[in-house]
Image 1 (cartoon, rainbow, N blue to C red):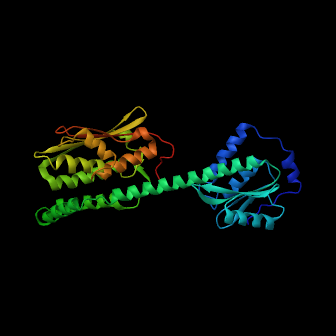
Image 2: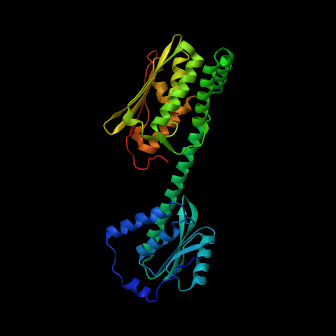
Image 3: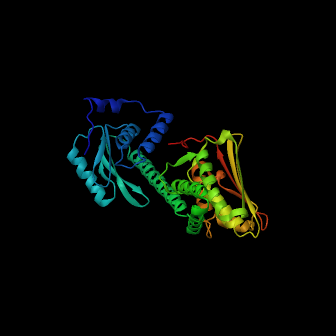
Length: 355
């Protein structure tokens, strides 16, 4: 057990202290929840225990993880008795003890996650309410950790979506120019290296919009070498949005989709247009092609993750996760009318910063 020493007479002070007002209680409860983001064994466990002690107004409160290690705020009068009580709860998963020493299991999703142990005269109902608060904070921490892992998995999926067909065609074109146009071959090889570096190298969670535009310019240069006159490209971006931080690898899948599913099936030359500009407090980026298009119902299925275009669905989910449900992709399309995909993100968003 990890115990915290306290001055003599502090128990009497705790008994004599006035009850906190509602605002103080709510503020303390929020702090406890924040401290438990990394669980009962995390760096915030001691601060969380202090918050629990404050909420209950008791001389000592402890949080125990499943290994049996307890982080205390305050010093229990009988550590051996507290240890035995915690062990009993861990094995029975039911409350144990009686005032002034009690222990309550912390249940998260129907499973035991730890134990709240309290020493002091306080109503049993109050102890149970604080236990529920702690359990809810632990559950939230687990959900946030799972969401982060899911986001990382989706990013890995986007990186793994590099088309072998495109890589083969790009390298074939580069190889064919080695003798006839070595300067052009060298230029394309550098573009190919930039493309691979941006797609596969380790990055932070966010990148500047300027880097995303550079990556798609590189990709489009390679595609123009492969498709020749079949592909025309227009890129226009306002300077005032270049520094806006956006989730990494959020634009390239949109451009790849425009070429692969819009221009390549087209029986004539086609154009891909990419634009970025500020609209009020938002940055709006559009990727548009004049290719084959698709029925609106198919576009809806694509964004839901059905079919082979998982890149668009991944980008849509990541945008909604970062900025909220109203900031996903907007797809405008119809058969024979091309496709326009619009990304709208705030110019400034708390937590969205460059590494």
